[in-house]
Image (cartoon, rainbow, N blue to C red):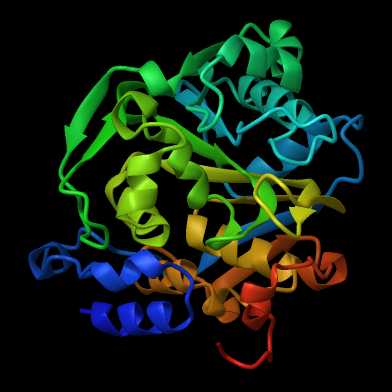
Length: 336
């Protein structure tokens, strides 16, 4: 069983999440012995070039799904974009064009139903946020429905890991009833967690009716420990599609600067997707504490355990600006 206390010491020393110093991260040995956490030896991740949002993105999304062997026929698919706050520059949220293209792609694959679901962490007025962000117009012709996870029916889930101080997790029924849950984050850095990608995107499934705005309970419990607990506990079939056509560098996830990267990233393993996305931003995923720890039991973060499909990620890599506290995330940088 991995040494959770080693993770605690490393994360605290790196000052990535002060709250880590107050928790005792561990996973029940019994769960490990029963095989509750069993990752593949190799994870497939597809990186595809996509320069603009006005391209026929449904074709690109279809290619990514096929490259990763996704089967959707007859399945109820729930898409969870990153919808945080209205930004006229279009750098905060998953772009509506990518969401609409993904709806179309899954319908081409004969999905039984495609639902878009999100629990925005800042705005309680979803009608405003959907309209201002352009998602309402993008979805209008698709016929897909939107579910506000902040007010969805919830079920109590026993945590399968013990990183945060939370005793249990309350998860929305719409997510738990999905035949395939798809995390659709934005390619962004984060001023408290280092990066915010497919695993961090799951903060948006946590209902505001339980966890507050902007999901304050999770922040009090520790951002990185909460990321690990949520991802360990959500056991429905999952996939990830990351919008990196335009990402965010600097003071992310809200106040940063738009950065055009021209990529979409696909994969079933959220750890491998996040590790690949971090490398696209010239960030060493092994230096991001929660990505490294998730790589011990949830998925693969090591380059040699990720089968890259589609484009060569090195060809599309760009240097994303980081806040000074995270300069050590660069490959070869002096450790914090």
